[in-house]
Image 1 (cartoon, rainbow, N blue to C red):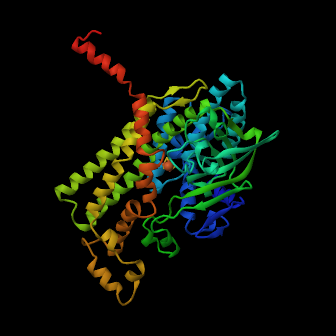
Image 2 (image 1 turned 90 degrees about the vertical axis):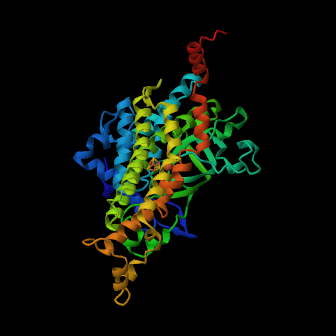
Length: 481
Ligand code: SF4
Ligand code: FE
């Protein structure tokens, strides 16, 4: 396994094509806006080194028998699925951000079973190819960026029906030694901090959409891959050099538009090419795993936010008020409900034909549907408890200024024994998670990440087995057909 330090160096060595604010960035490792997001991924390495977290953060590979980082693991039991969620909660608690490495873990597990079943039906050799790729990922302890979401253009048209054919990533050329792909994947979490990018189709495909049913992995610095980093609310505060003003002193997340401008993929890295009948399965399994993930990571960030709200109440002198206590109970209830559902979909996991474990898809979708709602309510309550100061507090430079600093100190003082600076730190953290850079991960990503709410409702409807429920009602009411 790599150490956190080795991981940073491995990213620095790559020759990525990253753009931000109209300028080319050499590496996320030395960029003040991107570095916090790299630190979050680094935490997945650092935590794996710590003996007290070994059980959650590491696993034994079913492919090599070696000890590996759990983010590279193929789940071998329902217990592995449960441990995955617990690991994500831990990482959320330690970073209060999106730590980005789950997308690849979820993509790898979805491809493990899908390539196996594709081969069974079509006589292809994708599974063996995928195993070779997986061994490399595990041995070298790589970060894999799972890539699913195409730009999609006109949502009313299917991939082949778009005026611009590149709006869904597709194969534009087939050669004896591989394929050439063109298109883009949007909202790519952790792209600049990844070694590999593992692409999957974004929807179930019809037979005429053969060129769009494609899955593969390439190093993210492959020729033709261009990353354009997305803006985040308050992102340029990171350029000011004040950890007080950014709220989260070390960690963050990042997303990018990743463009594939005629990228060559060698045959040994192609895991689906034209098997449109398996594209739906891959999408369903990947999104199922990633919906399970959200009941882990968001809960960990929620723990930090609840803690920050409770501290704000302490510093404001409001901790004893019964409505504050009740709001903290409500936040905890919502947060643990998210967790409960992800633990449930994990412990109800079952073995696939390939041997790895898949979560209960109905419960995973219910879990993510909850995530589209509860973090918003938790954030609302945190803002309620914090008070308006979380959005009106002056800058650190004002606090330190010889002339006006004493006024900031005096008029924003809360309870005795807690400095104004300490009170401002917790206000900024709440601002960061609910409205600032981390809000990408905690709020809007809770809504749209791993699929927008309607995508879960479609899956819930498919899995709900209403006919069985009708039959139950008929027996109880003694209705005979
Ligand atoms: Fe992992 Fe959560 Fe970020 Fe997805 S949103 S990559 S599950 S931390
Ligand atoms: Fe996500």
